Image 1 (cartoon, helix red, strand yellow):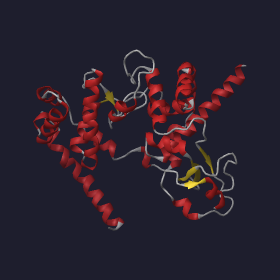
Image 2: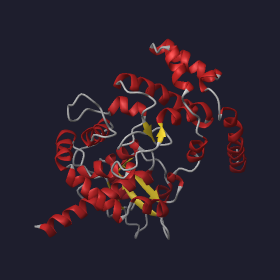
Image 3: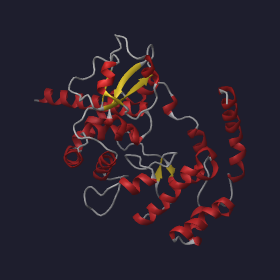
Image 4: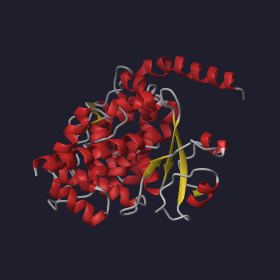
Length: 339
């Protein structure tokens, strides 16, 4: 299929979206056949009360603005316009404040899970500006809109809707009470429902997993997520590569984030400035980012790949890493000045 044909089909799909969602902008969502089918499956597979789910979905609303937001994610921007969204002096200063306020919790998480405090702070900083912007959409509305009326990803979001209902039953909370992003991500670390069920923890032992209001649970849950995805304590994350000498040009076009080249082989192919302390058997990927005047090339090691498991984007992972480094450096500088 040609690129022109693919583009035409994508454009046609986007043009057709209003026609898909228009019949359900008003009325009782629970009366729809696809919603009834979902309700019946939740009853059969997970023992939910059908009448209770019908009542819940009668109060659920399809939100057209969610569909619009899904078509313009920030990760489609080039690196040179994506980076300034997150690497700002304000976000760095707020990150230092967050770290200072929760230093003991971050230390405990680091000791238990091995995840560097700055990375945990960087994640929460990129995701919600340290809990200040956790989303204003009801999660039930977001997941229902995308599950029932966004065909490109309906399978994924119907699965998340299932996990959301299971989660709210397990946590004993009202499904209508929880708010999040347009994609249904929740709390300070913006966990989707399946991630909450798998990785959210009660880090302070108060009997609740509260990633919305409890910094302890948010911090512990991020650390747990990372270690469960293979984070390696104390290992390097990434470094910018020097292309002042000839290298294998094919590597500069790769898009695979998963480390698949040994460090030794990359050294042999011309990447001469790779950290000498890195073991030659360590695996890495070449991360290529679109700069304003020239491309940037980075070494993506195992821990960089783990960051991309949070959001499958090299732009996202690099923003987290660079924000984390800026926060760490600013905090260290501040400590030296205060000494």
